[in-house]
Amino acid sequence: MKIKIALLERDANYLKRLVMAFSSKYSDKLEIHSFTKKENALDSLESDKIDILISSDAFTVDEKEIPSRCGLAYFVDSMGIEMVRGQKAICKFQKAELIYKQILSIYAEKASSLTGKKFGESNVKSIYFTSFSGGVGCSSLAAAYAIKLAKNHQKVLYLNLEKTGDPELFFQGEGQFNFSDIIYALKSKKTNLAIKIESTVKTSKEEVNYFAASKMALDVMELKVGEVDILLDEVVTCGYQFIIIDAGFHFDEMSYLLWKKADEVVIVSDGSEIANSKFDRAYQSLNIVQEQDEKFRLEKANLIYNKFSNKTCKTMTGLRINDLGGIPRYEHAMTKQIVEQISSLNVLDKLL
Image (tube, rainbow, N blue to C red; front, side, top):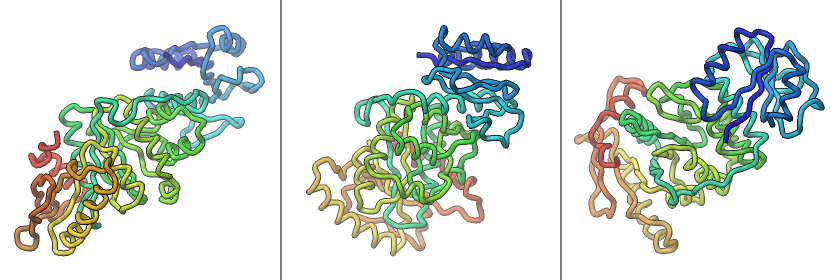
């Protein structure tokens, strides 16, 4: 089903260019109706069952003039304007892709919620990257694997659920929304979550899809297990082939949920004495968890060593976990450079 958009703009040349851009990129998703006269646009709202009216701020549209089911936004000339007459503002002078995402965000707040396929009921492969100790580079490996998948022409979503995680340490993309918008949509329960996801996600130059970090870590801390469960079920409906989940393991309900939902689990360690000790204690506990919960399967786990040095690190033995191998320590390199290097290593091919 296409979203029906009415564009009201006095500048006929701008209107023509925007309609052409939308028709070229989103003909399968948008049905565009364009107007230079307010009365014609308002008449179209009912006759053409328009979903969203986007009007130049040169016009004043009274909410009483439009159907309750119809969203309303204003075109403005400057990026810094967020609201006009109590309605969302959209800057005219930006890429069509960014205007499209803002349109989706407005539509998501008007559309009813959708129920899609769940994890395990689709062809989407989900991989949970986690660790039992800090500082081992778990997020770097998760980001590197997402890049590797994108290089192999897979559509991938990198989903960072760490409380203080920041995907833009690894990726850069355009867009004004962030993970706080997703959290608000989950909590309000009044938004079409699938459309909100599409409007919020950014795409990096490597073609990795991700959500920018939430405005505050406290926003992520407010996420409940049931809300993350809903989010995970919804992202599988969004056309991704792989979902890379990046989150620590804390022996709590959230960690158990992520483990059980994922197709594969990658545990990252560095082989140091401290990390190996923590891993051994965690591994013993996981065996007990598996005995108590038949849905918690230890055999889906994989172990990979990061920042590994034969001089100071040791591999662990006697584990019933698939050992993927090791990744060397990179000295004097920036985070993005390290992630790019790791993405080209063959050790990650075993997960494909």
